[in-house]
Length: 596
Image (cartoon, rainbow, N blue to C red):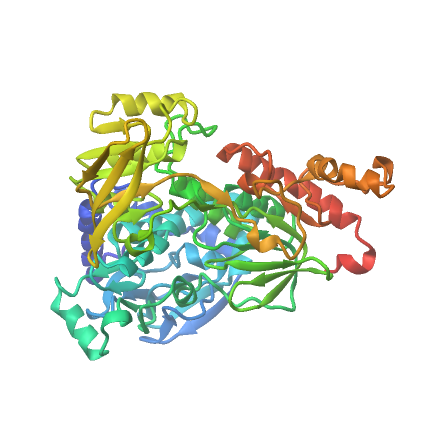
């Protein structure tokens, strides 16, 4: 880890980082000690020469702030003379010096690819000359000099991974770990690959003092300390998005070439291919990039990964790749309405009524988690009932018996993953076997896992608990009509999803009987009878691209599309294929509508 021998403070920081990495997780993915040369590389004079034409030199005096956490960032900061001392804070302790960047090193992490605010503060150590490379120029550099770009991007990604594994560098959540809102914020940040830390006031008196200082109680909790030091009371995910720069201010005046609704595998593929081919792209995502696939513990049948890859890792790589090509990604950004009777097309944001304009819209909005009809289900969401299985949930059910409902591949992947943490996993399905709904390799793995038990013809009929969370469930066997109580505190629901298309009704996008969006020939086939009745024959009907909906310029891909193959690889393929159809649509627009 390239640290100046004349900087004993930085050397101590190096030792602290190394020891933290050793104890960070039971199976860490990043060894900071061994990979320090990749995380904090020192660039050669030749590398620096390449970078000079992409940035602008600035001089800072000793102690002057170079980087301010939570505020607009200039991008990557390369040290030409002097040094930048980097500090982070959690709102309770004094700022901690964690690294000093010397000549040839650069400050920044993956957020700087898209111009988001930094997570730490940097101060000039002595008179310091810095080459400021703004995000747009940084992206141009990565493309122009592939070898140098690879080393820079690797360093930025590894720095983010290191922050996540150390639970530092992001917002600090102050509240009881058992609180539903704490879990909701943890899940949101974790799903978006964002570092954070949690401090329970019952375990740390300083946290209790901070709560008392801000006179917070009840609905005010949890408190969240943002990287810039601002404190928010019981923030929503939208508040967190604003706090961390994940939800940027978007102009209603700009006309995007493509607005992608949904940043799952299909949407991210569209964003990457479209942006890499010169189109301006905005991706809007309601909760977290990667969609449902991003929550998969391990995907083992995706081409090119013989040992499998987690959905989060696959989605994270695609997310960074999209940022590299200049895609603007807004999270959380739920859409409320698609307006198709104007030009350009407009996407209205839910709640704010802000209207964003686009020449084309790609619908990759996937599906919403299906919820069983249980009277008090909402009471226990986040406090015993969960719709995904991430490491956060896995820690909660350590050495406990848990129940998982569902028989699809996602349920199988989650059961196998959770079996490594829970003492026992009970799988409930309504059918008599898993054969019709789950891949054979997962069935074999479940059968080979001693602490997984399958219950057929079974469903949950009641949930019992209190304000602290779920305490008991009642299960009915439909075949024997016998009901059994289980003293479990964790239930995972993987019972499928419904297409997220209700918000499209005002636009008239054609859907099938199940709510999935028709495209291409399916649109023509569905309208065929009505068209014949009105005297319109097939030869008179307008041509339509294979992935285009009933509304010109609006395309649908991935799980939300009718007749699509519900597989990650298929979604990525459609996301790539739709870009050529977008180019064709844009090329056929009248000159006055193509714009710039």
